[in-house]
Image 1 (spheres, rainbow, N blue to C red):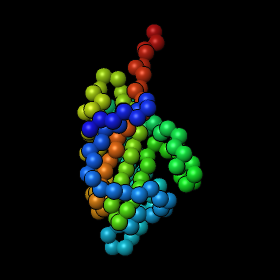
Image 2: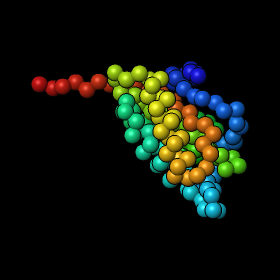
Image 3: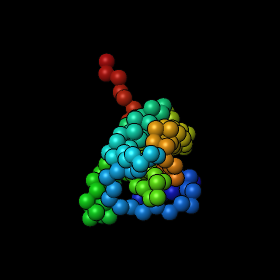
Length: 141
């Protein structure tokens, strides 16, 4: 599904699972262990950048809810959790010449697969938001 929110085009497969945004420093994984959300964000960053067509991660738009809650409002990756399930939003910039939908779907699959393998937690939703299109590099003679 494609959604248009302001200047962003959002591609999302929604699984009708509700999650809540709250400030959580650790996500519990099997065996009673916890993984810091900063580590989860780093995993998402690495998995996203592995996909061909992703130029970089982009800062997300300013969000009043994030500012008030004390979360970093401009981080390119947002991780929320509820009852052991993880909800991820990642803001990317797509390279020129690549189909946006194809790149977004590939990022969704790669992030979900990598995080489920590494954490053992169910990833309920991976929202890929196209925040920017990278400019074509001009060769200087």
